[in-house]
Image (cartoon, rainbow, N blue to C red):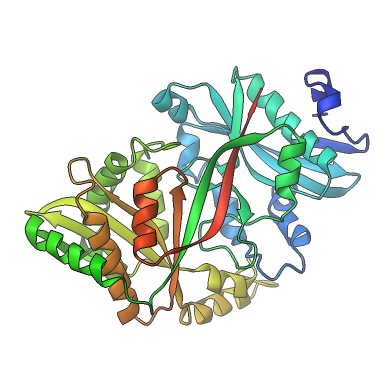
Amino acid sequence: MAVTAEKQTPATSLPPLPADVEVTPVRSSADRTAFIRLTYSLYKGDPNFVPHLEMERRDFMDPKKHPFFEFGEVEFFLARRGKQVVGRIAAVNNPRYNEFHGTNVGFFGLFECVNDAGVARALFDTAAAWLRAKGFTSVIGPMSYSTNGEVGLLIEGFDTPPAIMTTYNPRYYAALMDANGFAKAKDLFAWELSASTPPPEKVARIAEKIRHREGVTVRPVNLKDFDTEVARVKAMYNAAWEKNWGFVPMTEHEFDHLARDLKQMVKPELALVAEVKGEPVGFALTIPDANEAIKVANGRLTTFGLPIGLAKLLLATRHIRRLRLVLLGTVEGYRRRGLDAILYLDTLNKARELGYEGGEISWTLEDNHLVNRAIESMGGKRSKLYRVYERPL
């Protein structure tokens, strides 16, 4: 499929399309492998890059294995200059997003590209043409495949590796977005919090008063009753986030799929449920930063058929010292009542007991001032900034 978007967008406002680059959809197993492995050449020599596990990426792209494809549609594209792969992108049709928000937007994700604005345009224009043919009027991204996955372009915070299930990219990607007519839709924050630094005494004192006044009990999830616990958290998750920008309720299969993946990493002491009179009203999920181990395996569990990467991964897993707080929320009726502070405190105390050094809280919306102030009150320092972009079609 050749790029023809120069007839649809004023050439004077965008970089010229390179005549020697062709963008085609992923159709073969070889294309899929090239799509996945492009990152190895693009990030070669970058000490902070952490590759995804190839096995996980193949499942992520497989309509038979990932639950997003039960309702959504994705087209994967590769950009080649001759025989060399120089970029990739996914065009995403997420009908559940548009139904939930009453919008008419398409999405792009999994974007990777050499430092060439023309190649980036070829990718963006091809994805835009696919989305435009479906009737969408604008495109938002990067998202893989929604806000329930990896979201945003890294804008600040290139000096440290990404935490598990967060994005990382070269610094020049922001310039590629600007050159191709994208504008900011929303910024997302990541926060760094040390387990060795005790929370401010005032915060801890107020949280304990709220705990006793409201009758709040906090318990770890019961992995022996995993399915029941997942059902409880699923209901709270969809209720707690329903008014957030970009939120899309997870389907039963999506949530179960994510829960199964996370179960391998979860430490019950760091997966907390807050209850009032036995009713679950809030939760916090913090997981070991498995990227520390995945980086050692370099994305591959086997080499020449031998489980060398797997052995490295399992060994490195024992030495993970960082965490990522992935989710923290309270249901309607219990917000602005201090439950978030209780969950933060209990998570921090348990992380210290387990010997973790600290880690990342991510991500939060730039305009969620209540949550951002709460994290700052606990001693959190903003460490990364991610940007979601939008462009009319």
